[in-house]
Image (cartoon, rainbow, N blue to C red; front, side, top):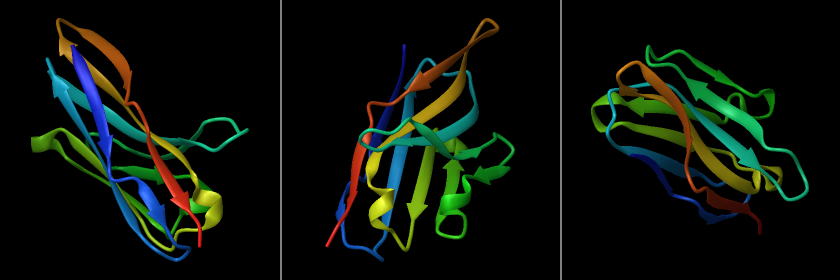
Length: 120
């Protein structure tokens, strides 16, 4: 069984920063792509950033230059550093990853989500 657990969300003023973390645990053989998604009220879930196991990254245009995704493979953890936050960044942020559990089986896992609220 594999679990993804996010932390680091909260309430922050516009222009502020937050750092989200997502730790994977369980019977993990290898973690491939790790992603951060977000879903605002009344909107579809969108891919915010992803990072490959080789460290290549990509971002949705609305967060480029403000958010940075990184990972610590030794800790099976992915991070999202969010700077210059705007009210429109308010959403539930979800961690997502493609994980091999051995035996040639690859599954996609989701975390439970963490709320980020940007408001004065």
